[in-house]
Each structure stands twice: as C-alpha cells, then as structure tokens.
Amino acid sequence: MAFVRKKNIKGTVQHYLVQNKRVRDKKTGKSKVKQEVLAYLGKYDSVEDAWMNATGKRRRKLERYRKPEDRANDAAMEQLARDYQRKMRELSKQEVEAMLPHLHHPKKDRVQWTPWPPEDPLPF
Image (cartoon, rainbow, N blue to C red; front, side):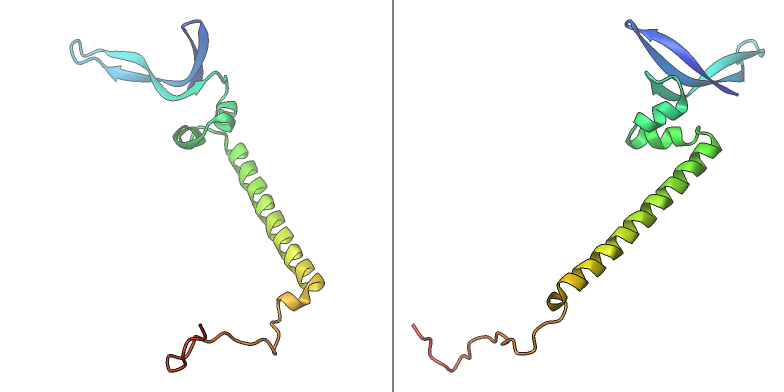
C-alpha cells in the first residue's frame, strides 16, 4: 500500500510517494519495516497533480502509479482529440478543393521546361 509522505526541506514542503517494506536485518536476523520511495511528487500532494505538471522521465514514472480510471479517461480524451484533428484536416482539404479547383488540376497547355541542348550555342 503506497502513501504520500511530506518532508520539510529548507523551509519548503516536498512530497514523496512511499511504500512500507519488510526487510530482514543481516546482523540480527530480525525483520524491520523500511520505507521505499517509489516516486518524487515535488510540491504536489497527489500523484495525479504531479503527473499533470511533470514532463519526460518523471511523467513516465508517475504513469505507473495513476488510477486506472484516470488512465482510461486520458486515453479516451486523446482519441477524441485525434478524431477531431483528422476531421478538421479533411474539411480543410475539401474547402480548398472547392474554392481553388485549378490548384489541383494542372493546366494542359503549360510549357514544360527542358534543359538547353548542348549543340545549340548560348544566346549571350
């Protein structure tokens, strides 16, 4: 069971996601309970807030400790955003084709450029 631990460092409160772990002491052979730090949350007191404001490696690490319903909600929102962007791209392509049809159909009487023949003398 993980929980958030507050720690006062140089006058600011820092938060850590920690878990209690039972470890056997090598010298005495007895077991002790030690805290293992799972993730650093910084100034945020919940995993979700820390994940929203993190980037890169820390964000990927915090992803493991988020609630499953939050993960599913984010996946659904990302899918909706991708669908919306795809729809907007398709609409903009259709609008351009409707307003400027000559851009998509090259003129048939356009002269093609050809390189200067080597046997002809240069005009200058």
